[in-house]
Image (cartoon, rainbow over all chains, first blue to last red; front, side):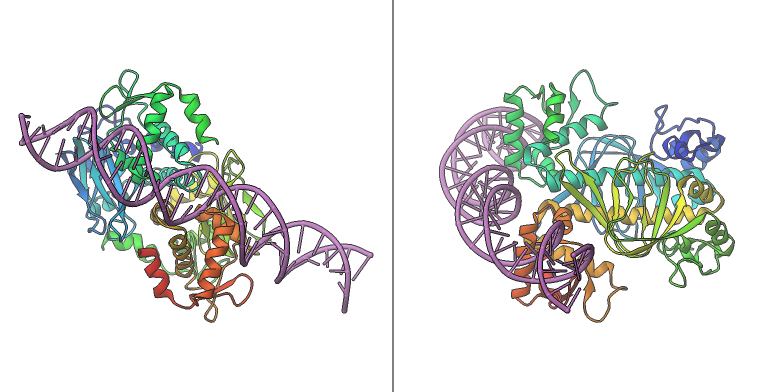
Length: 243
Length: 243
DNA sequence: CGTGTTCTTGATGATCATCAAAGGTGGTGG
DNA sequence: CCACCACCTTTGATGATCATCAAGAACACG
């Protein structure tokens, strides 16, 4: 047993059977993925599934971190507020991602839905208890956290060292990577507004808009409908992120 | 027992005695902190302490992630390379920090020492085994990871939305916060070069230099010697990060 | 069908990068 | 011990990128 595999494929470890979570369904995601049948039962007892609307706020920055969420369906943005009122989007979350496992008592960022969504909610204290009973769960959370850290560092590179154009290109590619499962036909979901993208990339909405129309004119992308985008020449976008 | 406390003060949990690690000494840091006497013994058996020189590289970006390091003494920088050769510093690490627990088989960033240092090294596969035997260790690593994620997101805000001056101010304050223990007299260690700082903040060395001399002229800081800095008017720096 | 929000496009200007060169500092070896 | 050398830092002049200000167009919603 290679420990790296344990991190990469938590569902396989400790001889756990592949159980199906009644909430997530067959495409078992988020936390459930780490658990065997007994563990799942435990988890489900403490879990509530909730339907939420776009713009709903899961929690505010600074709020008590009482719950942890799994996003079953939909997209959310994580934001931090600046004293002057502007906001920085620190990340987007998609179906299967965990949201709100905070380091302290309070949430370090706010979480807001961008689309209609289904979320699974569990009390933080119960999750911590659960982790004691089911070590694979803890390992799963650690793996997710380490992965997220790498993604955030990547984002730091994008925001810190790249031109506006390269940033937008990198964003589109990350969108494509994250939604490789959720892609329908040849276009992919892009539920965030220009403002969201700008706040994510450290740009203004005008700059984002100009660059996207530039991409359109040059035939790099197409926006078949609101909230959808199609990458027509991925290599060109990749080349742009590389300088 | 409040689960939040378990995260915040891992040394206390599971009734573990406060044991002293023979390597770290009394100011038990990094991983050792999570363990009881038996666990420490286990850990020490797998651990080598090494002395390293400035500019030594702990590992390169993309290298096999075979070892995890605890920085006992000294400072290191974590960097990612861009295709064009420039680098982004994704973080600095100080005494007590863990370095190199990667999500996959390979390191996502490089780690290079800025000062003479002592590091504790453990094989990744042994650490993973150890975590199975000692759940508090895993909990400790998770706590550190979540904390680090929050710090990186904060850095994202700094780089994405602040002016050059505000970025440098924020950097100095973070330096002060991180080294509150290691402060000697009234000045604190700043072992990184202007280039390191610039690469961390998404600026150029010229801009960093200009801003620091500006701070000096205005009496906000003093640089009593190479590699040391003193913050004379912290409130002013705080105000700058907020304006 | 209006109304508010989001998106686009243009004109202008500030911030910060780039290019260039000189002063410091530490380290090395003669 | 001094001199030389590499590297880091500072300072100045110029210019590009992107923010800001402004206004109109497209769109979604009730």
